[in-house]
Image 1 (cartoon, helix red, strand yellow):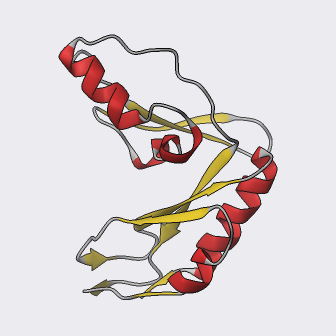
Image 2: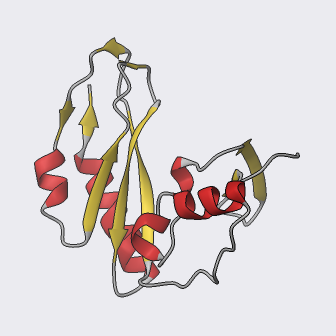
Image 3: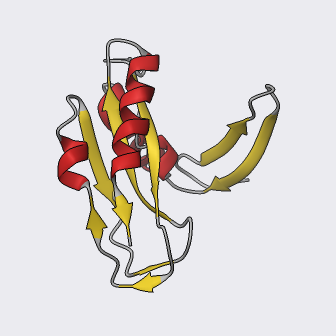
Length: 136
């Protein structure tokens, strides 16, 4: 693809194990935000180092983590977010809202990041927290 820095390559794994290509973005991507809580050097640091030709050390896992997208329920201008307080009561959960001024049904509006003692625990926390957050 050419260019400097990292590319966010999004793939999906179906329940039956098939791997589907979704998109490639020539920049850090929301699907890589899990690195903000899971590794000692995150996707943004790697991107800057790569673009500047600086060395990137080996990335080390700090804790098991997972991410889950926050989707809009409907189409509207100036959306409002509800359920954030309940989601943030879950230990190990962080939320990043993208601040988009307009929504449409199923638009990505944010992401929940969760840590846990296992990846499965982190996934469960992220799914639960995301289910509590509504963008209307």
